[in-house]
Image 1 (tube, rainbow, N blue to C red):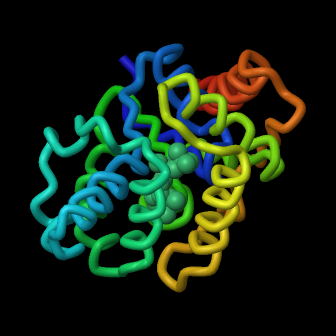
Image 2 (spheres, rainbow, N blue to C red):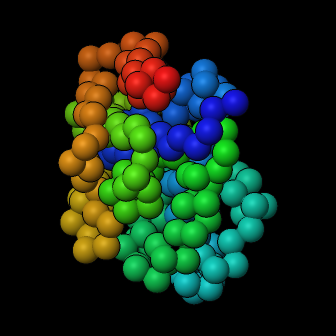
Length: 207
Ligand code: CDP
């Protein structure tokens, strides 16, 4: 069995982090944590009227199964609670423990390679142009039965990126040692292959 290895996959909204992370985890048999879901679950509880810190401290596994977590409203609420240092701090230990679990872990988010796990053995920063990311998210939401307009989805993506990049605590940016993967002109298979190849290089170096 692989010892401890953390694959940190960061990047802006709808860049393809989730798809790539799941595929990399499945390929190597690593565990996967979508850290955006933690912030979305806190954001959803805040929309229900719970205070942000209370929501983060009381987060339970069942909260991650809510079926409204992928909606644009919850995405916006997530990025608003994500600027709060006390919310980020409340979610840190869980993410860090997950990252260092035996058998390998893939975490995707905004600050995995910079703050949660700066010691991660593999760091990828997955990105694509805002228009392409918005189009992918639009198709995804539409396929899941959400009634959304293209312009709204683009505005959501651009607005969240702006808030995520400009917050004081754990802003979205590539770690200095991250490999940048621009998926604008890549198929899913090509993007996954590039990510898998990067992890393989690190595993091979370990011997
Ligand atoms: O799926 P998408 O990339 O659109 O978003 P997500 O990964 O589910 O994240 C939703 C929001 O949570 C982001 O816009 C960030 O504000 C926040 N987030 C964060 O601050 N740090 C993370 N590690 C993950 C998400």
